[in-house]
Amino acid sequence: MRKWLAIWSGLVASGALQAQVVISPGEMDLGTVLAGPNLQKNLVLHNEGTNPAQITGWTSSCGCLSAQKFDGMLAPGESRTIPLVIRTASLPAGPHAWNLSVSSADTAGGQWNKSGRMVGIVKRDVDLEPGLLALSTDRETIHTVVIRDSRKTPLSVTGWQTTLPGLVVEKRETAGTETRLTVRVPALPEGRHAGSLILATSDEAYRQLEIPVTVLSKKQDSVRMAPELVELSGPAGTTVSRLVRLTANGNLKLKIQEIVVEGVVATTRFAEGPGNSATVRVETNLPAGEAAGRLIIKIEGREQPALLPLTLKGS
Image 1: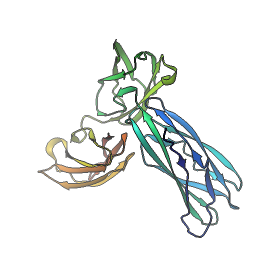
Image 2: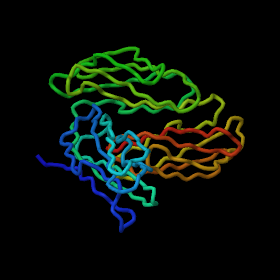
Image 3: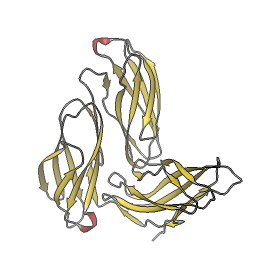
Image 4: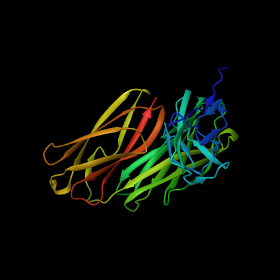
């Protein structure tokens, strides 16, 4: 079997100075990664310098990789263990790579960036559809979650819990290798709400399956967007785009001031028209697996921005 290693390689931003904060372990072998359960690992940040250092930023190449953020100070010689989580439910089978970058600065003015790459081979026996649930709505909605197990002895869903207030699984139906759950997402206060649907199963290797849930709740009199959810899909590594039209109630003229992309890597362009509407083009290079984010669209004359969910699916 081909062996994949994660080599946490240090990049020194200043060129001449040794990086203060280093990452260990130096090598990490993820081996075979089962699609479905979250994969949890730890990394250690260690200050090898003689000055206190602060962690100033974290970036990852995939929305499926997250680190428990630490932005405090590390004294000289101090170490801090940082939990990592890779959400695997949406990842396609085959080789994968995950990049993580940690920025730091010391009290003497030095700045550094440490980056690394994790790789592994994802094995898919169990499919979750959807691998993540992202909604933009002003009312209660009903959705179906499907769990498929291609193995000779399929797992069974034995229970569930949710971390999104008011989310309820109303019905479970099982037929052969497939289980269907009917999920009710409540009407929520205006704003962004995030949580998870966590499924317990009869299989020890798939003890918990987690589906992230993001809801952008809006007022009924807010700006109308078509579509209300942007999903960009295709082969991983390809560039795809989508147009979105925004219209204000009463057909008042709408002018976009700025768009901020949050949670995923994408670019946007916008223009006035047609008529009193405005048009946005969203473009991205698709990552492997699924990632969810949103566009924060700031509009002239409106205190609250329009929020547009954005889901990327690379196969």
